[in-house]
Image (tube, rainbow, N blue to C red; front, side, top):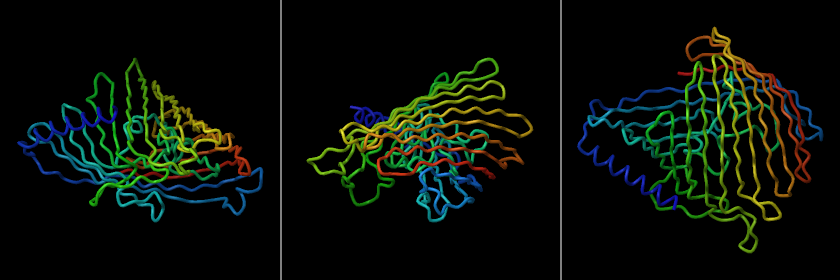
Length: 378
């Protein structure tokens, strides 16, 4: 039913847009601009693995970078519709995170809202609360750019990307017009493929997902000297084919994710907290759905003169197939100083504790990292 409703909505909106645009002329052709970021970081890491495995042959210092450039452009037609596109180029060498286009989509917006088609984040993920790096955008404990520390299977807290399938799979996303601070969006992806090309449909694969439906909402209200934001989302999938044989069901056929969070800002202080609960594809040995739960709390303070500080805590729990639960705790104190428009230097002190309860594994680890970085936005 969800797919029918979403498909009907998309068809209706597309029909309206096509009918309106057919007689419209652009006042100006689309012109293309470039923006993006270039981030660098270095770390000194002291790891102390209780079982003597993770720290073997590991470097005590490391450097890294993350580069992304976005090509984008838009134009407003005579009938008031805005048509545009955005394409993100990753520049991280031969890593798995580098693609010709990481995210790429076109959009049409107007009084009806906004319709996007392409490789984009889901409606849930777009509306998910993330405190990010706090004062230091390079770091943080919630989906950081740079990790520099080994938590075994859990490298960081994540309350945005649920880790099920490709978060940038090819999809349709529709956002309703904002109403008194309330924003609502839905999205749908047929399968877990990043690009749909000539040659027909793909086939079901073991562990792959399809019928990816998501809804996300957020609400922001201002009060005397501050503001409050509440965000939530739901995302569901259908498993294409279980990894096990037909006679042995070890998979969750309908994994899903739910996130909830909020942030309060008053004066120079921001306090945020959010959580993401995700049912995994693989079940445990008793045939029950495995869960991953991530939580994050952070607070930041703007001291003025381009200086900010923050304190963050992140916690994740992952249920294993053998009924045990791995846990990760991260703590971070961070600061940044703005050198000029779009240019800042950052530093952070991070502590991590990973408790590996998987039978037969000896990956318990604790570490402390001193992190220094720069960020250029353009």
